[in-house]
Image (cartoon, rainbow, N blue to C red; front, top):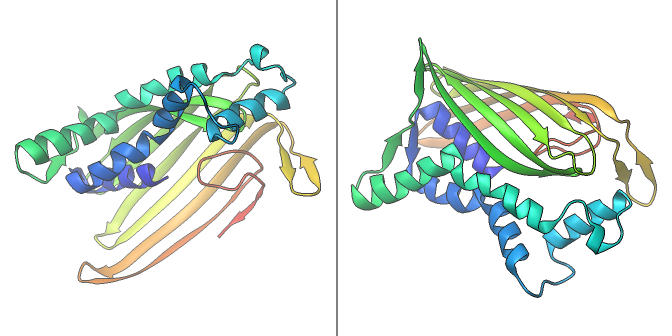
Length: 248
């Protein structure tokens, strides 16, 4: 979530700062780093997050024998390598080591391709869900004060079928006032939710609609106002609770 926040800041400003790049690199690669280290280790604790994730998912779908796991640590580690070649990760490496360390500058103008009056930037990344891993294909379309982000989520479908997509619109009405709207839709299997009492969610189509307002006074006074309101059905999407309900 921190990596996504930094990335959206780059899209709004049109520049990549070396300090933000140094935060983005380890944060964005956390999944990949954790998966590869676990996969290569000889002795891993039973409390290891990756092992718990793989074991609990396989057991949930009826594969209790480790030798018969459908979803494996090796599979996840190999798939997660795509994050290394993520567009924003490569830009971050270039900004920190070339622009900052070698040239002595602080910012890189975010490289994008021209599509008429709109700038376009494609990207892809790896993610984990309650059903398995997924690839997320993203496209960014930017004008002077706004950008649109589209995403398509493609599940590995090893244990179950799931996929989805979304569109978000980000605009700067004034220099200190930003408006954002998110719309997502997905097809996902049922999930078991709850604590001492559990229930199963419905399999099928779900979604999320959210609006945001972000206002701050000015650069010299770090005071502002942020509000987010929306609704989502039961299902998985990054940064939100799994159950259905209002978002405020």
